[in-house]
Length: 265
Image 1 (tube, rainbow, N blue to C red):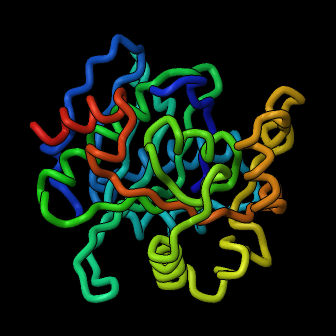
Image 2: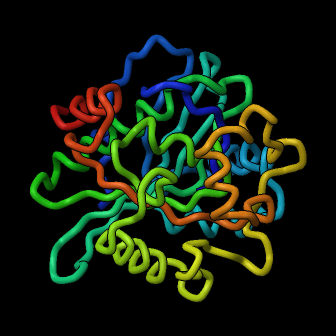
């Protein structure tokens, strides 16, 4: 998951376009969900242009091929209707150890630097996750992501009470098995189960110079230190496999409130 943006310091199967949540959080960015298959060529170009401002090492052809295997994209536009952020998503159902599960996979996720601190993206995203849960309420829904940077990793505890891997607790055997299963299915030999990291011999996109820097203050954080220890090759585009269940009982209060808005929608 190529993600750039700043998380808050405190707790904060394909669906039709009509499932777009109506988010009114007083922010200047306007969220809109679209099916990837409906994006025009100009829209795809704008996505790549924004991506390439912050990431290097991925050609436009590779970016578009990766986009094509996603279902949905969350688009964030400013008051002039200019793209300032996006997140690509894929949703699927599968059997794991004899039970049905659903998976929400996060792909490339970026917000322009001037909008760092805006909560339009995470609040829109978690509301959308609520609409997915509402569609099949009796089947567990998991958020599966691969993390290139510490900023993305720091979003996990703002959303969820339990997520893995977590610097504070060991990963339960059942969750570890699910993480291995999901990562091996999606990434094959690129996934190293011994480290929980997806590695590419040739970069599949990594933070551009200047954007991968970590401040001295951030380096003192336990979560940041843990991420760097688990994924020392992050600057070369290596990605740490992460997972959490998206359920009301596992969400922090702010995230739960917006998730429940999606459930009601």
